[in-house]
Amino acid sequence: MVNISKKQFGQIVSEAIDAIPSRYGNNMKNVGFVIENKPSLEQQTKLHLVNGMTLYGLYEGIPLTRRTSNYSGVLPDKITIFMNPIVNQATNIEQLKSIVKNTVWHEVAHYFGLDHSQIHKLESK
Image (tube, rainbow, N blue to C red; front, side, top):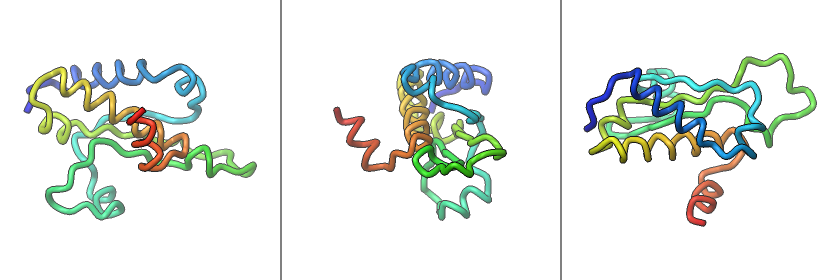
């Protein structure tokens, strides 16, 4: 576990967002990033999370690949990074930064419509 303030954690998340390759970052529209301590009860229920399951991040919205010409006037998509599970998993600050960076990328990939198998395939290259 790493002892870190929410402000410091937010800075690490900001750095991870800034590290998104421009070919992706420049094409992200109407999406917001937020930090929460842990998934809400509603999120836990929706995702069928049970005790012991860890969730570092969550993309909520309509992926680009599923948007139609009727997509307009909607609230921004949301990417949430969950601080407590990441802080509890990391054993040092470098590992924490790595988890955050990977989590941000993973959730951004969902925004672009990639599923878990596609994300893992890209990560293995």
